[in-house]
Amino acid sequence: MKRLRESRCGLDVITIERGSLAELAITMLPLPGESAGDLMRRLAGTLGSRGARVLKLDVFGARSACAAGLEALRIALGEDAPPVTWVEGAPCSEGAIAGLQAHAVSGAPVENVRLGGRTVGRAFEDRDARYVFFGDLCSAERDVSRARQTRLSLEMLEAALQAADMSFYDVVRTWFYNDDILDWYDAFNQVRNDFFAERRVFERFMPASTGIGAMNAAGSALVAGAMAVKPKREGVVCGPVASPLQGSPHDYGSSFSRAVRIAAPDCRRVLISGTASIEPEGRTAHVGDVDAQVALTMRIVGAILESNRMSLADVTRAVAYFKRASDAAAMGRWAASTAAPGLPLVVTEAVVCRDELLFEIELDAVAAS
Image (tube, rainbow, N blue to C red; front, side, top):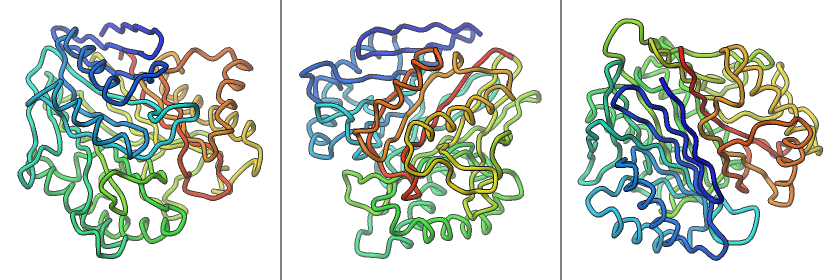
């Protein structure tokens, strides 16, 4: 495995080369005065110059910019336009877009996963496993309860998994962007718990996950995404990773793992769930102090990485969610105080799943085995 990084204003590309195949983690931030359409055209150019195809694309920005951005992407990529998860992740500075992140691949065929006449996921294979990324999954029914919409979204994900010759046993990562999350997070957790119990997900392991408060362009109660992995040979193992500084979220009613590890003969990946300032017993720490919450959260993340023989230098993508855009500078203060390496990071304003939590971060890391 070989790791390369290209970083300049508005663009961070981390390339993981494994033989003739390369995976790209692309983080893009808008340049001064750059519109949503211009940003998408710049993404298309970045992909084209590397011969890469997008597997998963997440955009954090104003819903009012969604239509123009998606149309520009469709024109730029044509038939190769992927499913896009666009959520109202407000920028913490001027402009309509906080940033985008794309997971792309070159040197391997990419297969579309279709459901109900539209592409909902993309798959590729290497010598170790088959990987499928799903996005923009939400209920078509808007006039039913939010709990019901959650159930329908999970059933849609299940149908998409079946279309990709997979099941919930293969899911290693999920994302849920819930509109008005604080008003119904308990109900959401109950629906997810019941669904996972019915599908016997607990008998394997719970996926890593992010559950964050953000509106979506479709106006549904939530929009979801997922990643699934099906090993093709021995020596490829997926499993949960405990957090050395936190307890299990299942202890307080949330069905996800703190992190998930995907281990292959030449490469190790750790997918860290949305992580916040929560003590081992499940209580919120440092209420009202954003700098202390950021510092504790990053210690928690660092401990997870260290327990897997990794560090922040191995991170390929990260998203920082701040409850208040005015608090976003806390991320820079933390980085300056710790001399941390620059992260491929999108910083956005979004609602964390507890009212007293001011900050949450999710990230992925990759290192050689």
